Amino acid sequence: MKKQIRLNAFEMNCVGHQASGLWRHPRDRSWQYKDLSYWTELARLLERGLFDGLFIADVIGYYDVYGGNTEAALRDAAQIPLNDPLQLIAPVAMVTEHLGIGVTISTSYEHPYTFARRLATADHLSGGRVGWNIVTSYLDSGARNTGQQALLEHDARYQRAAEYMEVVYKLLEGSWEQAAVVRDKEKGIFAHPEKVHPIRHHGEHFRVPGVQMSEPSPQRTPLLFQAGSSGAGVNFASRHAESVFVNSHTLSGLKSYVASLREQVIANGRQGSDVLVYTLVTVIVEETDEKAQQKYEEYQRYISRPGALALISGWTGLDLAALPHDVPYPQLPEPASGLVARFAAGDTSWTLNDLADYGAIGGLGQVFVGSASTVADKLQQWVEESDVDGFNLSYVVAHETFNDVVKWLVPELQRRGVYRTHYPQGKTLREKMFGRGPLLPESHPANAYRDPARYTDDFKQEVKL
Ligand SMILES: Cc1cc2nc3c(=O)[nH]c(=O)nc-3n(C[C@H](O)[C@H](O)[C@H](O)COP(=O)(O)O)c2cc1C
Image: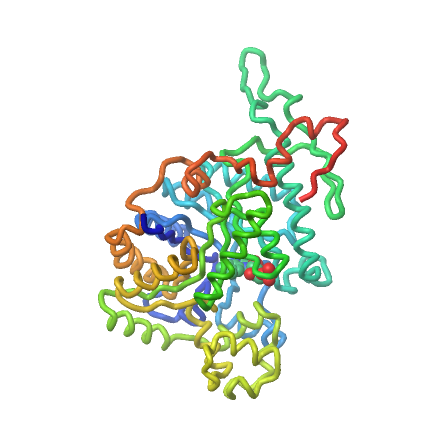
C-alpha cells in the first residue's frame, strides 16, 4: 500500500499567523480571530477535508527583538494581539465529531498543578480530542512579564520541562485510579478516597504534595506534540512526543531528521511508528498551475517586510533591524549571513529583504504552488523519500488557503489512494491517530507513574525521565 499522507492545520489565535501583512488582503478574515464563528467555520471546513487536527500555536510575550521594541510587531499584527488558545477547544469540539484540537502550552510559565487541571478539563469537554504541544518558549519578553529576569538558558529549559512532565504524568496518570469514581448513590460514595493518591512530588523546580483535582479524562494525558530541533529538543521529543512538528527547508534535511528522531525513539524503548512527524508547508493550490501562480503573486503584493522580520528576529533572537536590508548576504556579519544563506538555496544575491519576502508567506516553511496534481506529486515525493508522515499546513489568506486545499488537493490525494476517505474508528484523538486505545501505550515513560503502589507511603524509588 502507498504511504498515506496526513494533513494538519497550523493556526494561532491571532491575525495572520505566518502571513505577514496579509491581513490587508481583501479576502482575508484572520482579523476575525476574536469571533467564535471564525473558529467554528474553520473547524467544520477542516473536518470536511478529513484533517487530523486544528493545531493552535501560541507564545507568551511579544516580538520585541527587531529594533529592540514592539513597533513593527504591533503595526503589522505580528502575533500580537494574541488570544488564549485553550479557550477554543470547547467551541471547536461542539461543532465537530472527529477533528483533533491541538493547543500549545509552554512549560516555562504556568505551574503544572493548575495546568494539569486545565488540560484535563479540555480533554473532558472535547470527549478526548485534545493534543498538547509542549514548548519551552523562546521569547524573553514572556519571561520578563511573568516575574523572571529572562528565560532560563536553552538546555535548562528542557531539564525543567522534563520535571514538568513528571508532575503532569503523576497527576494525570497516577493520582486517580481508573476505578476511583463509582457514583454509588446507595452507599453515598462518589469516589473511593483510598483510590485517589497524593503524588508527593518533591523536585528541583516543583513541589506538589497532593491529589489531582480533575477525575481522569478520556485520554488521561492528551496526545503529546513537540517541535524541538536541537539536541536537547530531539532528546525530549524522542522520550515524550507522539507527534512532532518540524520545519525543514530541504528534503534531504528532513529525511535525516526523521531517521535520527526514529532511531532515538527506538533507543528509548518505543517503536519508530509511535511518533508521527509533520513538516511545515504552505500550499497554494488552484484549478491549474497558472491560476495557482497568479494567486501566489497576488498574495505577494500584500506582504509586510517589517512584520516578517519582526517574527524572524524573535524566532532567532537576532536584531535584524540594525543591519542593511538590501545588500547580498555574504556582506552581512555572522550569524545574520548564515541565517539568510540557509534559505537562499545557493543564490548569493539574497538580501534580508529577500528573506523577509520568503518568510512572509508561511513563516520559514516550504511553499508549494500549483494545480492539485503538481502539489500532490510534491507531497507524495516528500513523504516517500523522507518517511515523514504528513504536513502541517499554514494559511496565507484565512480561510481561503484551507478552502482551496479541501476543494482541490484532498480529492486529488484521495484519487491517488494516499489520503483517507473517512475518519478512522475511535472517539479520542489517540485512537484515531494510532488505531489503538485512548491511553498512552505501556512503552511510553508516563507508564512509570501509573502503578498505585508508587504513591503509597513506602515507595522508595523515583523513576527518572
Ligand atoms: C512547526 C513548528 C511549530 C512551532 N510552534 C511553536 C509554538 O506554537 N510556540 C512556541 O513557543 N514554539 C513553537 N515552536 C518552536 C519549538 O517549540 C522550538 O522552540 C523550536 O523548534 C526550536 O527547537 P529547539 O529549542 O529544540 O532548538 C514551533 C516549531 C515548529 C517547527
